[in-house]
Length: 561
Image (cartoon, rainbow, N blue to C red; front, side, top):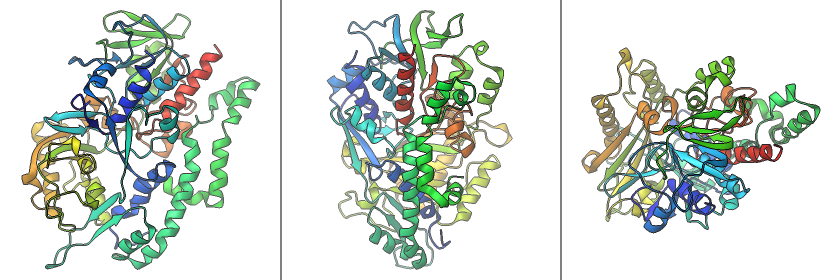
């Protein structure tokens, strides 16, 4: 977890869960930069949905090295490892529940189950906990949130119910939260324009007016429109979708219970009202033990997991924080799942165009549109999500077309974040860590070629060349880099296709249909096996809702056993 002490960022959420629960319990003008058109959805909506956290956050976790060692046992051997163990370091032969995967949703689910009195063990494949929301010291002295980098959707209930603040979780409010510099030729000595957005509506309108007075006047109405959408969606995140299988085939009591879960959906409909068609358009470390498979009794009920060494860990239920593909196609004996179910899981859309690049630098980027301070200290725009190559829709379209043809984008869309601008403990004095979220990169290159080191470095060099255009001197500041193309994200973090959401967040794979129609209530055709990760409702993002919702579903089922 980034060096055994000090402060960490996103994985602080996961460590707080461990310290606190697991161990303790044994409308748009083309003149605007195009990315600004997406901001209310990619930034503002996330900000609004996290209703009690009014903007994007960095996460910081203060933990002594002693506390960290107490919370988890470090081992260099990657495997599914239980993040819960007895005081003597021995794995018990039986638990009430087993959770596969110590990503943030798995830890949230385990924390709630333990809090509710359900004896729970957590297994993790890697040598660090946190899944994709983990901090690692890839380059000595530089701590990176290696796959995830922003916390904007964490459910406020989780923050309070699990007392994460008490266990060390700190949130850094970012205001302003978005910076989009322009590449403008022929401006002479004039500084290129840029767009800086925060929580001040009047200041936002002034910023937008640089590009379009009409858009500036319309922006409050647009924000209100998106705010209404967020208000409608918010309650849907914290409850399981209607159990359509129970509604279709269950007893009268089961049908009545499933009808009660319609309440959040009806509330959303009332909020959106007659504008619903418009909104539809908008939406369009632990003991080294490896889990080999989910164990099933002769009666077709889950009874625990089988480890790679042949030993068994019995449990009444198993929650999988792994992707639907790994859970049902690799860990679950296929004979206990319907053929149609297996086939549909194998057909889930998992395509992802994202390559994540983590960079260590010896100074802050110096943008032409917003020059650095004389002493080099971070300025307001350095704490933002910085969007590059977003001046026109044609740029994004061409970047997408490149990837569709099997090539990495020649001019990729870049989202650049500098977490050390808010938390200087992430890098040595005067230095910084930079997160680059870039698009578009295909999983398989043209001609069936695979991503080798040369291909990775060629693409990263192209990204750095683009940044150099906005911030001259960036390339000479680089001390090291970590390049994660889609196959790397799949191999290291178990993300199918490199998709950080486990499967696409498209309308046909959301709510009632996540991961599949009739199987959106965290349950699956095999009794006692549940999904609790991003492949379940409400999907990806560091929000913990899937883990929380699944835990409550499991607890209800255990009570009725």
